[in-house]
Image (cartoon, rainbow, N blue to C red; front, top):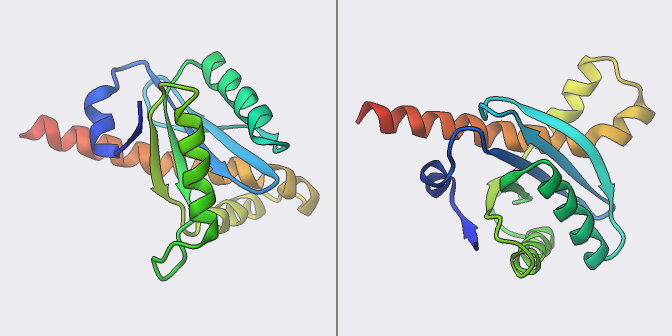
Length: 161
């Protein structure tokens, strides 16, 4: 499947399917996975980036192991809403992944997700060294949690109609 929208995901997912959140960095890929009820995002260990074929293989293995039905990937839009080189790199990554899997990818505006993740880790009194290890997975959790909250709102609205 190709790139999808969060609205399309509402109709294509059924109860018990999992959704992943991805924070694509230049050195790591932060990962989070939803619970069965698609209510909470749970961070997973980061993947260290090497080259695309190895990254894709490792990521697909993890997504398959976790039985993920869709992936929400953070889109690093600039604060003014413009798209810079990191957005283009993320879109290129997804285009290449689409050739390897049927899992739909949903772009999610990730502005301030890393800032929120950093604040949360500081609030939990996580040391600077450990924050550096966990920040990308925490950011992936924030990205995924935002998408899960939106999914719940859309489902609730759909049930009320």
